[in-house]
Image (cartoon, rainbow, N blue to C red; front, side):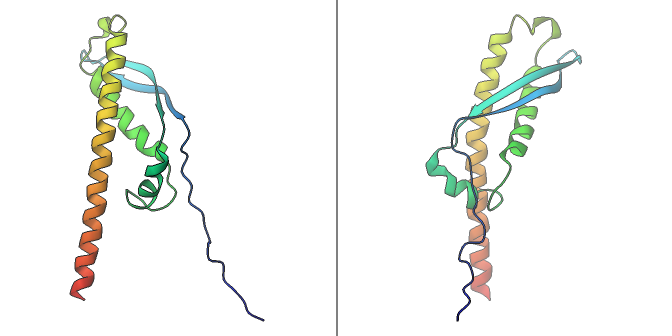
Length: 134
C-alpha cells in the first residue's frame, strides 16, 4: 500500500467576466474646500490571457482581492478630478467630469499594470542575481 500526497492543494481563481466595482459614498473636496459625497462605479473585464500574469507575476502571488487596489486608485483619482472643480459648477460639468475620470482611470490602470510588471521582473532578476552569488 502506498500513500500519495495530492499534487494540487489549492486552486487560484480570477474572475474574467464583466464586473462592476462601486464606491457608493466617496467623500472628496472641491477646489473651494467643500466636502461632497459622490458615487463612482468602475466596470472592467480582465482578459483571459492576462490571468496567469496577474495571478503570479504582478503583485502578490495567488488569489487576491482586486477591490483593494480599485478602492485606492478610484478614491485618489476622483479626489484629483473634484479638487479642480468649484462646488457651483459640478452639476453643469457632470459629463465633462465623468469623461475626465474615465480617461484618468484608464490611463492610470495601464501605467500601473506596466509599472507592476517591471517591478515583478526586477524582483525576479534580483533573486536570480542573489542565487548566482551563492
